Length: 277
Image 1: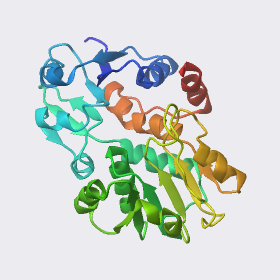
Image 2 (image 1 turned 30 degrees about the vertical axis):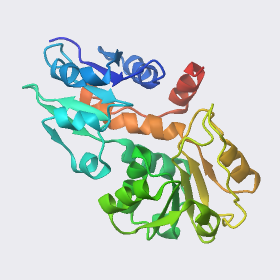
Image 3 (image 1 turned 90 degrees about the vertical axis):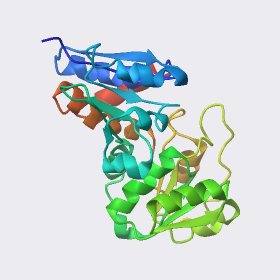
Image 4 (image 1 turned 180 degrees about the vertical axis):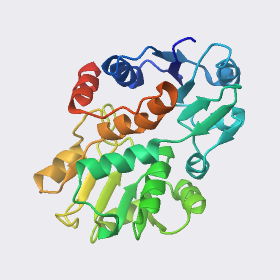
């Protein structure tokens, strides 16, 4: 029996940290197997997924721009993937069927609970900035955790309306210009936009109304401490960076492909950080 093989499909895919973290786990647990970068252009996605079984793959991760379009080529998807509207992990069955799931919601909520153990879902409203794929995963996780109100704030309202329609209550849409007022009694602020990411404009936000006890989470991890997190830390808010979400979302995938449930450790975090340009 050949060692299990997995990889990450994207276009481009050179930036992905997934081979670094899965490679670390393979070595740490002394497992035979491999995890590869798989550059796949959008027009080649269906064919590439269809060839996985004959090439001996146990499955793949999916990154931009394949998370939504891949659904059409799969034999089935989980409830999580259906609600989020995107797939980031594919498992292959023994007979070659392609089953898709989404582990981003798990990665987000596990990272939040680990890095900010004092936070409780029932502590108060959550404010989520953005309405893209990452925001859908975050809102789905918060909804399932029992957060009483999720205020979604996006620069374009129609995109946010799609998100709210897909997930339903307790999501509440607010225009971008109402951001400051939305922070007044919030227990959690999550930035899912690219604002603050390396090479992107900073997120312009007045944290003045935000309670000092509110947790501030930026899912961006390049840089590790975004201007938002630096400003929140300076005023005493608990902060959570985005690297943990990346690490934790990989746990269920690795377990399914290689048969061992890996741990997210300080050593893994340091290893992935050291690989970043």
